[in-house]
Image (cartoon, rainbow, N blue to C red; front, side, top):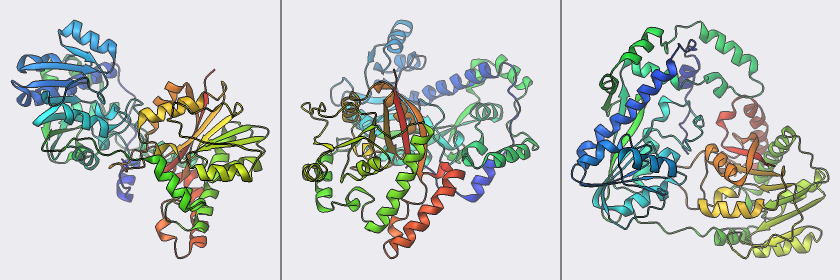
Length: 531
């Protein structure tokens, strides 16, 4: 996952940094000028690579940087996902721009010598598909020039991106892993800022460490005490009115001179840059994973919680794992004011029918389930004739969900991250959620941090990507609650004494969830369909 390993020393350093003073007048305008200069300096860095080359830029925005590249390239084409931005870049800068998705470029194979994409990869839904598509349109020996914000300059350990348009942010290690999945030769460098620009940028991106690290419901008094102690320290992010006047009066060239490139101390860089060269067969699309067959076979071989829970863990330990899930899901529904009594619940990816029984125990009037494992669904239908079950792959155009009465709640527990293709996920959710009434609820689980490198049958998505997906579907997130910190991390340790280990983990999880929820690696999201 895109999550740095915590250390006590670094945690304490981040917690006990001073709390900065209030922002001086005109801070936002000065910081915006610096940010623009930081984006422009990337094009100066790219210039030696694009001279007399056929160049494609993905993410041209308004074309303010593209206009610098175009005169030096043999040919130049821009791409942007946003039609209005593509049109503006064409009209204002005279650029040849195409409105297109970078994951499906409308160009033939091996058409370009250089692809430029700055500050885009953190917005892309599927990075692997994006990089493979770039490799496809590059000629052999062609070069990708790519940049992204550096995570340690912006986020604390385990923090989800506060910029809701960023689906992920990279450190030097995860950056290299993501790029070398597709490109054999990757050379990275960092963009650094001099003192005033550095202080201004870090002040602009400042976040409350106490709210992040001790954000649990039990930690309010500790947070207040910690902030009071930090406020007594000298402000290391101090930006004065004089500083702002200096930035406001600086020329564009002066602001550009505030930045420089280096390969040392990458943890202090503001941005990561890389030159990636296409070689041999790198960049070809990998074989796709057949999720349907995988789950049919797995549940056929293990028709218990061992088949639907953590792979390889004993059944007695799985029982403790599912107790933790029950606790978190009921806590989530309670926070949203959802009363299970008398409700109709549909469980997508129902497996062996565990949660249908659980919802009925808590008062559900009608339950049902959908799964791809035909044999399991047939058995559930025979064992529970009052429930409604369907064996169906919802990616199929023929899938008919009309047999289900309009549900009040649809659950998708530990299943959606096994749908690794974004388009397939959207098709499935659109079909599934069409059954929900307005103000109906969808409950799903995910790690909310991407897995780097990716796994064949698992694709975790970030919180910000789920917000985008749910917005497309017409939903808004009502509650987000951590499920596990310990209880699903130590399955490999639990084979000798699974019952004792499961119980200990289960009860240790509760105080941790109430104190340091940022450590959670499994979350439940409850979203409501908008009227």
